[in-house]
Image (tube, rainbow, N blue to C red; front, side, top):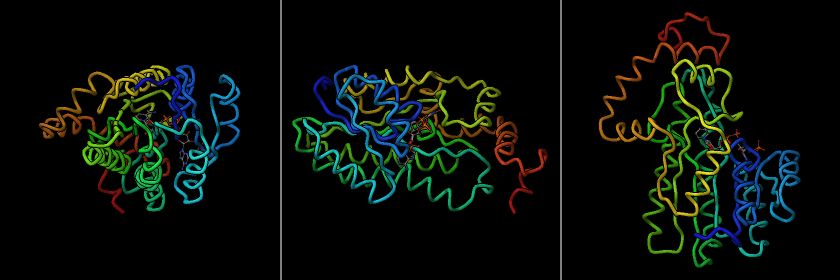
Length: 279
Ligand SMILES: NC(=O)c1ccc[n+]([C@@H]2O[C@H](COP(=O)([O-])OP(=O)(O)OC[C@H]3O[C@@H](n4cnc5c(N)ncnc54)[C@H](OP(=O)(O)O)[C@@H]3O)[C@@H](O)[C@H]2O)c1
């Protein structure tokens, strides 16, 4: 899709990946409805962009009021939006039984239910366009479920399923669905414990501006599925074909993951065996 002259709605606009993504879209001539909860961060982003390129929408994507505000802002845009980029999410790292039920529910609401509801709400508007795209920012953990990230992996697997099903359901419509997965990226999304885990497991991480550039290229090309990074591309494929191989590989890393997972919950004794955590 030729990007110049289009309008895009971007959630997670003030985020580590969202902000450079908005900047790259604005520089490609796209008008961006920048969605986030933190008004100050959105305003500061707007100030750094060319005039009239970014329009802040302060909204919590989980609430009906927030979703209504996004729809209202989208309906007021000229030209009408032809792109929805879902780039918000909540992160969660830690041992499964140490995560509280409320934050797990909130994570699924934010990462899966809200995107589902937003896409449903905005599709009638997107379908009025000659060509339109819904691009969902996923994760490697949406193809390869990772210990210590059970709820997050579940939400991203769901998001991948949602995107794939919609791509097939709307295959005869002007709307294209894209599932675009970054690997680890250096943003505030990752806690110090996650950074330490990645360092010890020698997991490479990307600069947010590079990720944003890949996402914009994928939007231009209409790439249906994108996994960034090597060996993540390979492992995601292997996990789909021979998951037992990945099970074995991750089993070897489990003590390291458990140690860093405990660090995320510092109330636990450093050497507590996994069974004793099942309280
Ligand atoms: N960073 C990584 O290592 C990594 C790796 C793979 C995939 N990803 C994916 O990439 C995407 C962007 O991640 P990031 O690194 O940019 O994260 P980030 O820096 O933590 O930014 C998250 C963004 O989501 C917004 N947000 C969260 N909950 C929201 C809600 N309820 N309503 C509205 N906005 C909400 C936040 O804005 P406010 O706080 O202002 O609301 C913020 O703009 C996510 O989908 C993430 O899963 C990230």
